[in-house]
Image 1 (tube, rainbow, N blue to C red):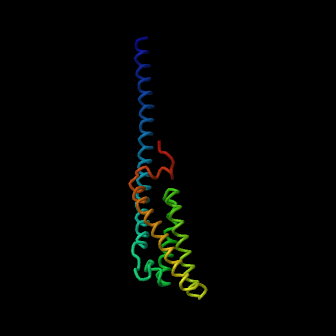
Image 2 (cartoon, helix red, strand yellow; image 1 turned 90 degrees about the vertical axis):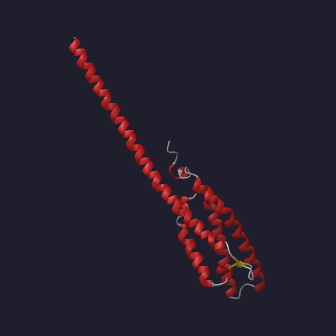
Image 3 (cartoon, helix red, strand yellow; image 1 turned 180 degrees about the horizontal axis):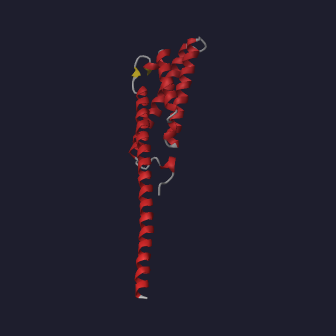
Length: 170
């Protein structure tokens, strides 16, 4: 009986060790995968934030004579900003809803300003009305941009800021 007890005790310990080792290894592998995935998301988040800050540089310099952004004075420059905006629009999913909404508001204002520009070029809008509208839209874009930039930096510094995309990891 002593031999049987010793053997069954050894077998039980071996089985428990095997199962324990299996569960520990499984947990470690899941954590490695989760950490690698989070690292990939963080790298993407950093790249998108850099693109956002770069895009906002379009709203830093105002032509003092025209009282608007210099790119608003020429169709080709206007179209460059719109093209950049459209390319950046694909990355908005990486931002939380509040920042995404503010970018959309900024994009809508840019489109509104471009529509006003085209109406002026076609002679539909009066020059004085256009200038006043352009000033108002410039001010609105500058305000949105000034609000967005610190929010992007805050979001960038939030290491858990990707949880809204993948849910809580724990």
